[in-house]
Length: 383
Image (cartoon, rainbow, N blue to C red; front, side):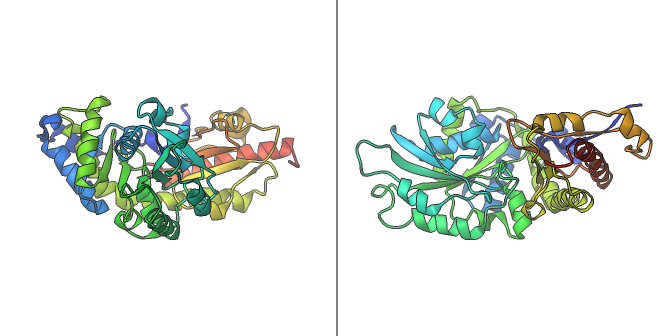
C-alpha cells in the first residue's frame, strides 16, 4: 500500500488548478517582446491596478523581479541597497545584486517580526563621503520567509517611508527608493484584512509571486511607475527574460488573482490548526512551536534538543516505521503518513501550507507530528 503524503516543504509545490489548465489551453497569445500578447498585457495591467501602481511587467521568477528592481533603482555604479540579513535577496538569490548588477548589498539585522531597526537604518545611509558607496535602495520582505511568515506591521512600513523621504536623506534630488519583495504579500494582506495597495502604498516597486501559494505554474509580476517598468522591461531582455507567446503562462496568473487569492485566509487557519494541535497535546522539551508567532501560511517547528538536527527531524517525518503503523498513525485506509518538511542549516523545520492542502491532510500532519515528537521525548525526556 502506498503512503499518504502531505507535502508541506513549500507553497511552491502547489499545483495549477483545473481552471488554470483550461484557461492556459485556450489563452489568446502573441509575441510579448513586441508587446503583442493580450493575455500578458491583461495580467500586467490587472496586477498593477490591484497594487495601485501605474504598470507591471511579467517575469519568469521572483528572483528576476527582485534583481530587476535593484538594477533599475541602483542604476549608478558604486551604489548599494540595504536589505535584512535574513532576507531572501541576501540569502537565496546567489548574490545576483553584486554578481550581475554590480550593486553592493548592505545588511541590517532582521528582528523576529521581519522588521529591522530604523535608527540603525538612518545611521547606515551613506551619500556624502567619497570613500563610501551611495545608498540608493531599501528593501523589505513581506511576508518574511525565514522569520516564519511574519507580516510586517503597517506602522513599520509607514515609519520607514517617512524616514527615507525626510529632507536631507539621500543625495540631492535622487531620493532613496523602496522596493518590496512581496513574494507572499497577498498573504500579508489576508492576515491584516487590508488590500495590497495599502501595504505597498509608499513603495516604488513590488515583486509579487504567482507560483507560490497562488499556485500558478510559473511567474511573478513586478509593478511600479511607467518609467520604472519601462526600464525593467528593457533590462529583462538583457537577463534572458524576454518571452514570446507567454500568455499561456499569464492565463494561469489571472486565475490566481481571481480565484486563489480569496482562499489564502483558509491556508492561514489550517497552519494555525497544526500549531495548535501540537501545542495542545504535546508539551515537548525537544520540539516546540510559538503559537503567537504563527501569522500566515508558514510554520516554524523549533528544534530545542541539541542532539537533534532539523534535517534529521524532517527526514524522520518522511519515513513510515512499523511502530507507527501498529499505533494506528495512518489515514482512513490504513496507509502510513509521510509529511514532507523543509530543513536546511536552520534551528527549525519549516512547514508551508497552500490551498490544495486539505483539512484531512492537516489532521494527518498533526497525527504524524505528535507521534514523531513523542518518540523524541521518550528518547530525551529533558532537552
